[in-house]
Length: 423
Image (spheres, one colour):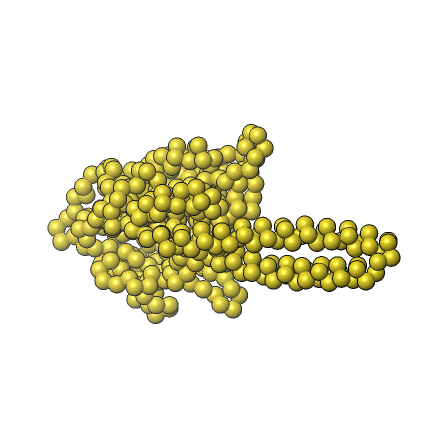
């Protein structure tokens, strides 16, 4: 969430920066500033009324001592009128402030200066490519056909049990899932990330803290009876560990990793992009989260990107790294780098990770601060990244490693799978 100070100091700068995200902030900013003017006016009047009440209270005491009861009663009437006005003012101020807060959360995060302008995915900037082009056999199959051929993922059974987008992993397919989760977690903990196992149901305060609510409410699964949400990513519960926390100056960096199943409604998704594992309603993902001092967060972002790249390289997959343009960024991000894997069988790139710096945007919502060397509290920076999301990693692994005799398992995964080939 943006701060009021930022809007007061230079509203036109905020409007120009948010235009990079193709967001017209002018009407909202104008309304917020008007509400802020009202807020300060209410506060000034309230302070004046309180001061006057104190003066009159002293006057009443003096009149009573002098035996001037009738005059004291008249002053009491004036005090009562002031109190009534104060009550009205308090109600107006509360309503005004609620509207101000509701408007503030409608503004997305400011993109940092590195973010390129653009309207959509076609305007994203490719910053790096790596890995070798896979050599596929003739008549290579996409992963959904490979899954059926080797009986490792059953999409039809998932439809029977739940619905489309909820596959059932079987045999070596299930073992491959577990192997990838453990491989990613082991690599993350070796890099200094502390493993946590958070709940997969969160309350509305957690959804608000990381920015999923109210912006992405329609994409989340809601458990109405208990007023909980199924997590769309481990980012939500893990980052909220730090909600309402003040970190001491020597407690940085904070580095956490977690595995959770993730749940997304993906409303409006259809066509070739949703076939097989390309887009699911339930999927497994390992996440990394960092909390940093502002001056260290972009160095941390580079470290996270390098770490995710190391995971992809270890799996031997062809990849590219994109810096997202303003129009393709999330509501809460200040900058995002996407990792995509090349699916030779499908002839398309598959996104498998987003690594983002949110700067102070989430921290302001979370009331996540630190105490600097002078004892002053300041907002932290938060970052997170997928390391990695499993479905499209599995899709690329199956497709790019297929041979006439089966699917070859990357060497780094064999200690986890217990087998070197599916087939």
